[in-house]
Length: 465
Image (cartoon, rainbow, N blue to C red; front, side, top):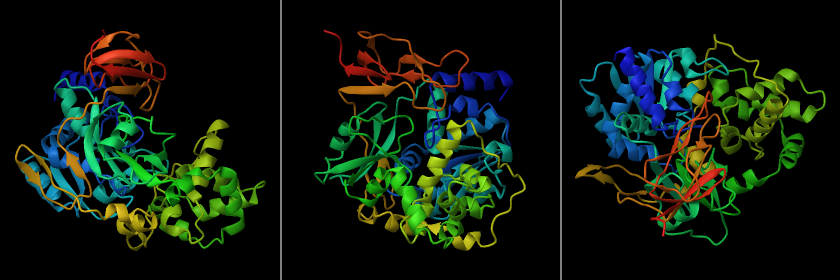
């Protein structure tokens, strides 16, 4: 692809408002402006219950491949991989057949361990390279992009903006589903689409049950980075852990941490050779004041995968929550990560200490939801058969109202370019990237009338009057 063509496709991706759909929402037009030799399409989807990326690979495999080829061309990469778990046999087989004859592109079969989709872990599994401590895959010559993101890149090349995405609605619902939902769809509407909650008192986790965040209530909305809406009973351990205040967590750490080292021995980043030892961080917190500065600072290296809290700790402590609090405190003080070792080497027992996903599912208390029989995903007569835990809705869903956040990505909030009372059409830009800032454009996900503008732009379906 010529340089002018590269600029055109990067601009198209920016115009479409594409952001990383599997993480914090880093603007994709910026990520693909880098120069690397390898691009990995991340289809690991390692969180329990989630099947949004699975749906993309099953229903839109050509888009995933097109997006990967565009990403390779934009970055100058000569190698491309589609990383899929071995257990997704039919999708793995279909993607392998699809890439046959594509120069420099192959499918990589991943073990079913957690968190195999973490960028640092994935890069090492696929390429054998190491991402430096506190670094990015770019430093290892790799761009990692979620398969949902790459499908959106393929859409952007055809002038279609990022206005909807597949979302899994699972847990304590009547009909666990994976459906394409417009950006800005309320959690309440999504749960209703899944047949409603199956418990009177419940809380909602946005994202996966391990790394997701508690929604304040059901008025929360689907964003470009929302892969899951997990409904759990209000007294579920995953809910209680998130509701615990940090003072209680610190007191528990001081009282109950026996320095058994289980958290460290199973920490995925520690096993990659990063200088993080969660048990030493817990000990340092217990010693505060006077805690060793290097132990506290190593919290920066935590990926927040929560293996320590979910699987490892025999006392039910949460080193990940401690690390999150330490990172937030250091950030407020203007401190930055001092750990940037490039010459890391993985632990000799790393292979034996990787955590099977089945153990994570059981220890997280979501096994009963994961065990439900699923259905096949089908489109235009093509069916991908495998044991999926959710039913994929092929019919389009369009709510009566959406509330589209101006900040659903890394960077600055988008600036509205519409006003209350304006009629907008689906796909129309409604907020732009601030001049000179990192950000992403926002588009209307349904046609209707702008009824409110604040931190989000609310659109009510239909025409004014």
